[in-house]
Image 1 (tube, rainbow, N blue to C red):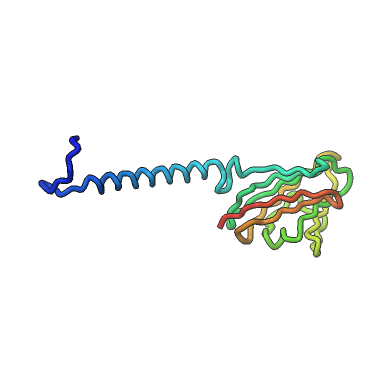
Image 2 (cartoon, rainbow, N blue to C red):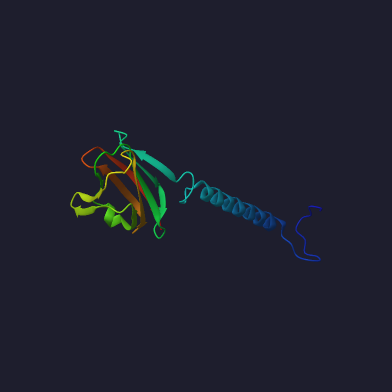
Length: 166
């Protein structure tokens, strides 16, 4: 196609405007491609960059969670206790119950108490006398930055920040 200056016959055309329009279209396609790439990596929740594991300094407790979550989507936390010989007591920080609605716990706790220091969940000792694993399904109550604090009885705790998208 010949690159002609603006013409009026047979159809009025403005090539400068057309080039700006093509440039805006290319920028729009690039922006859509960037958004799709970011979503696939997990930065918008539910992907490889979103999955994380936090380990207590004593290596006795670890938690698998997602760094990026959605306010209306159920998410899960998986707690691992390395060597549990007696009853297992998990302590969740005081803000946990105000930040998350707990849908289910597997296995079910023997007892749970909530006080000013947080939620304490007491579980039966594992039958094999080794590692204890508990899965908790929750729904975030609001969006923003949320503090996740988990402890094992009176031992050192894990503290992480989770970003919850609207």
